[in-house]
Length: 184
Image (cartoon, rainbow, N blue to C red; front, side, top):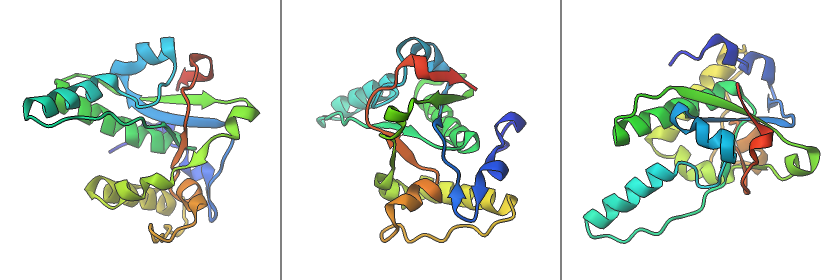
């Protein structure tokens, strides 16, 4: 994966302590979702079409489907958001044969809302499967590109702040109004 030059920010954000934090966060998505996001903001549980497709698939094979509510996933880095955007595009292409492009959104929150962004410790489960292993390798490559030692984290024993600082994984457990969201 080659991240566009305007999104390559890890060298500026990374230090031995991990990714710097500010009141601007990033979210990776697919261009096919931009119009809805620009109108309605970022909604928890994300891509409604993907959720509906999963529900229909489960009904077809005779299983019940109970929808879970997920927070809005965020990161400090445009580069990491692009990684997730690529994954969103790939997933939508497989499911809908959609011809979409990765899109990175900037979310600038006022201080009282910014204080509600949390480290995504729940990502431990994701990071233990193949997709997560690829993400960890990608994060390691960003550290190395910045001339830093890649983080070595025991996912089951890691401090919750390591998920934010070392892995760039955060969440906001409410919908985010369109006023705070812009396309990078």
